[in-house]
Structure formats: structure tokens, C-alpha cells
Amino acid sequence: MDETIDLVVIGGGAAGFFGAIQCAEHSSGLSIAILERANKVLEKVRISGGGRCNVTHACFEPKPFTTHYPRGEKELLGPFHHWDAQNTVDWFSDHGVELKTESDGRMFPVTDRSQTVIDCMRHAAEEHGIAIRRGEGVARISPRNEGGFDVITEIGGRIQCRAVLLATGGTRLSQSAGLAEKTGHELAPATPSLFTFHIKDPRTDGLQGLSVEEATVRVIDSTLTATGPLLITHWGMSGPAILKCSAWGAVELAERNYAFPIEINWLPQTDVAKALQGFRTEFGKRTVGTKSPFPELPKRLWDRFVSASGIQDETWSQLPKTKLIALTEQLTRARFEVIKKSLNKDEFVTCGGIQLRDINMKTMESRVCPELYAAGEILNIDGITGGFNFQNAWTTGHLAGRAIARKLDP
Image 1 (tube, one colour):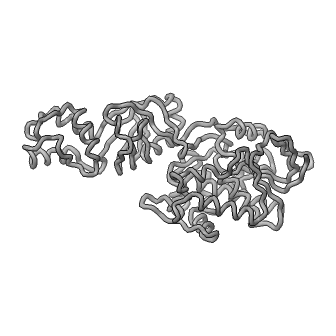
Image 2: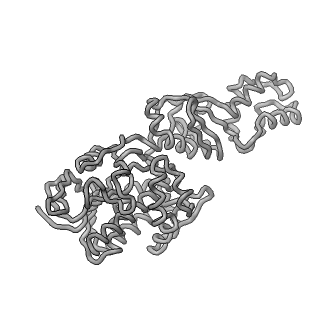
């Protein structure tokens, strides 16, 4: 069955929806359809932030904001001058969704429900007459000699359209990569960017759920280092400190086949050696394992480090210098072996995708295939955890939608 539509958006995620809505908001009566291969739309919005949706980050200057992108930092500076986090906050507020800022800068809907964001975007799309077509993947995009495209769907349909917005998400999926490659784009290889570290170690086994507010993680034999909250999980370690390392080291750690040693300072703001010596002087008769000098460190984790240092029933005054040094090392330079990556569905992001040199970053139009636009994770852009990947979706979706509206409805 053949049909004609002004704009076909391929991908029903954040970037695709926002691009379609922006196009509709800045045009008069263009026909727009969002085609999503899966049976659900905005699924990544739903699961992000533990089901709360980390919409953006409370950093309102473009230059500092770009520093949170391992890939795309330079190229995003211009786009963020046109649509930044404040624009995102204002847009959602204008559409009935108020955001709140948490202590680490992450911004969530005040309802703490990702469904609030989903309902807002679905309502905006429906209000503008945007067709949302689930279970309708795209098999091929064919440029037409007279301009525009034939979009061939996987269910046998053909759509003639004047423009295409490609927003299929990361190119780890063959469908996303194939559509981009068949329109002439060279892709940077898809590589996991946000992943957790799989570690088996007696010091952390059985402590899943324990966290520290601040730890510094360093990848040994590398310049990779990150500081932030760290969470012990049943498979190893996660939390912002780990995820930052994985984002900045995505390519390097892939080349190391995700097997590498790390070193952790569990108390980066503390002079640990001095604190231990002070505790030894003040509480000389107390058994070392009975009380931790560091209230910010979970007691069960302290017990593991005491045991790993070879300390048994010694009091502080009886503690040999060798064991005191070993305990200091456990607290400030604890070495762990990462044996593989562990992917957390909530945080799954890839680097790689359409090379940014092939995209006009003012309009998000392809330099290789005119009238084809791209937004979101299909581009070789990825941010660290904290709302930065969604802001990329909002910004590139906005620029693409506005540019398509100007071209199709001048």
C-alpha cells in the first residue's frame, strides 16, 4: 500500500518524538508519522533513572555542559547555544511537567515517574496530529530522483515522503546501522559506553546494595580516572564513578576486552594515614575491627578491609606497622580485577554511529544524503550518566525538527 507523508520519523524514542513535535510546533499542518519497529514507544524514557527519567542536568551554560560528552564535546557547543538544558526545562514546564533538581545536578519530574514525561510527549504528538505507528520497522530508505524518499517498511508498505528523520538509537542494532550505511554514511563502530564492572572479589561478595558517597576509581596502566558515588552490586560495581570511567574509556576498555585492573580510593577527601594514626593513639585499647574511624564508610565494608589486611583480634596499640600500612592500602589503593563488563539495561548507551563530519550540526541534515536528518544516539555522540544523553536527544531533535519545518513549510 502506497501513501504520501511530509515527514517520516524512524524511531519512537526521545529524539524521534521530540524532533517530530518540534517540526509540528513550528509548521502549519505538515503530515508527520513516527515509525517504531517495537510494540512500545519511548521505552528508554520509561526505564531511565530507575523509572523516574533523568530528563536533563542542571548545568545552564553550553561550554561546561559539553564537557560531559566523551564524544561530541566540540560539535555540541553550537547546538547547545540554540537549545540547552534551560530550554528543555522551560519546554517541559510549558507542557505541564515541572522538573526538580537533586543534589548531584540530575533533574527529574517532580512526580518521580517517567510516565509523566511519556504522557507529556504522547499528548503533544497527538495534539499535533502526529501518527504514532508501532510494530512498523523500516527495511529501506530510497532517495527519489525528484527529491524526497521512498520509505519501504518491513510489513510491505511504501511511503513517499519529503524528508526523513533518522532517530533509531544506537547503531549496535543492525537495523539502525543498516539504514544509515545504505544512505551513504560511514559509521564509527558501535561500542558500549555506559556499563558496569563485573568483579568477583571476597572483599565485596555479598555486600550488594552497599554504597559510598564518594570514591575515586583509576584504571591501572591508563589515564582513566573518575570520582563519584560507587555502588556494590551482586555482579561487581556500578554507580557514577564506574559509569564515568566506562564512558570516557569506552574504546580503550573494549580494546582491552573488558579485562583490566582498577584501583579504588574509598576515602579520597581524607588523609587516611593520619586519621588511622590518630585513632590508634586515641583508642589504643580498642580492637581494630570493632569501630571504623570513617563514618562515611559502611561498617561491613570496613570489616572486609580489616580482614583483607590480615588483622584479627589486635587492638590499635598492638597493631604492627606492616598491618597498618596494609590497611591504609586497602582504603586508598585497593586493587580489583575487572573480568568483563556488565550491562545495566537502565544505563545502556553506545558510542559510535554516524560520523559528525557528515552532519550539518546547525540543522542536523546529512551532508551525504540531502533531506535526511539524524538526531539522538544514532549520531556518534554519547554523554556520561546524569541526564546528558537525553539532553543530546532534546537538542538534536529540536534542531532537526525546526530545520525540517523551515524547509518543508517555509
